[in-house]
Length: 148
Image (cartoon, rainbow, N blue to C red):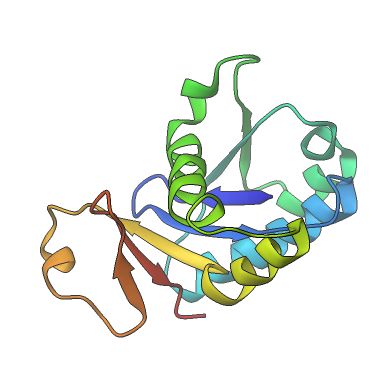
């Protein structure tokens, strides 16, 4: 799974990809950046883990010269706390929420229900007025499909 989470708005773009190769990571970033741009978010910096796909020349070229590329500290998931929280929410509310008989069956529900979601603060004003394409999890986090 590859995730991109905007630090300010908490817009999350996420995909299940077959591998963690540089081509997959570069393609993922292009689609994530399109999603962010379509929702009015200007990306100025990108933080990734230290995986080889994110350290590749292809990924660096895909980011371009105008984006600052930062890396998380090794063995410190707290450095990337919003993405780690997003992973936890997905585990609780999607991956472990139902019984799946294969990884393919689980992935199929992800593509239809959670292709792109926004995490909003449950205490915010937007949480009080749910939209047709969103729902609130048992932990009070609103999940909504991205308008892309």
